[in-house]
Length: 111
Length: 363
Image 1 (cartoon, one colour):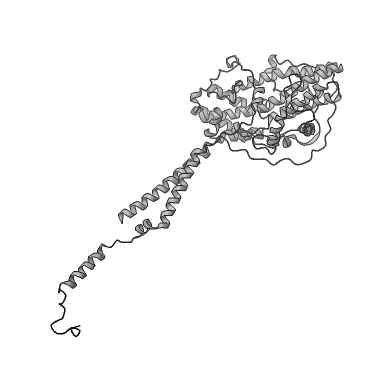
Image 2 (cartoon, chains in turn cyan, blue):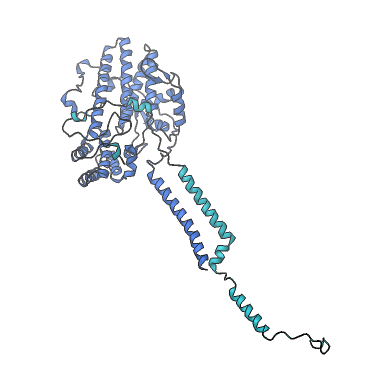
């Protein structure tokens, strides 16, 4: 390079500590770069993010569906007209022979 | 790295919690269902086999013996007609099972349930107090006539299984409407021979409905069919001046009310409340469990044995330790007994049923 310039006009030499400073800065920058491990890659993957959001949406919708659509009671196979026809007179259980009168279960106990 | 891992775990936790909760809710929903949906049975498509209905037996007045349902001996009688109904309306000899046809109209899953609903909308007020009837020439009425000429109507086990409180039953409104309609048609033209045949057909239909002797309400509907048929038959016989037939019809009529009362008595004894809509239950006690065991093993009528066995399921599930042991022993014995396959099937149901399947019936 000294051949390019006339004597006495050469540019000044770089500072002698410049090489060390540059290498040191590069090393620090390399150390500071983020690591791309499996967790990070998974977290930043657009495909996995989309899959997670879709699964949460589907599961949430299923919960909503289950809440809204409660199990309907089974239809009564006996029509009210037949129930009326088959209605029998009450018989006083205390008048039945040879046994103690049974005690009807109270509504609050039917659980 | 730690933060990324925590976020991934949190995201996965959300998914697993939602999925687990959904699975639990679906399972709870399935097990809480009070009854399994009725399976749709295939529609009967065969032809009706030919049948012959014999003439009624001649009435031997000196042999008639009107039963005394109010006498002490009656307490041991099975709840069936003591009068020989062959004097009024003997069953036909047609092969085939009428239940295979009638089951198609069963609610809610019968193959022809929509036709049954449509037919019920076609009903009109019948003559007298017979109630709602189909028009005399209704196609369903005509279609049903040969099925009343069969020798048998067996729902259990040919069509349905015995499942305790969830035992399926046929469409009794259709069955009763058919009998009412035949009786109503007879009442429109009581002087004709067709009127006599219509009354007898209604009685035969009731006899067929009572053959199963498995479900109390079906038996009561059968009894009602016989009663209304006998009532109109009495009137037809009166117009004809047929006094022996009038006498037998009156005897049969006189047996209908005692049978209903005895049925009410048996239901009360079983702990069912006969006047209530649906079923009533009573708290198991030592004496009651003993009584249920006795009824389940020895009642003369199968329908009451089956009800007693079903009640033993409640004793097994809700009784004290002693009552449970007693109920389980009786059910085991009945399940292994070769005396009656129907009793054994009901006992197996009562031995295995869970409370969640029984409790909806107590509402």
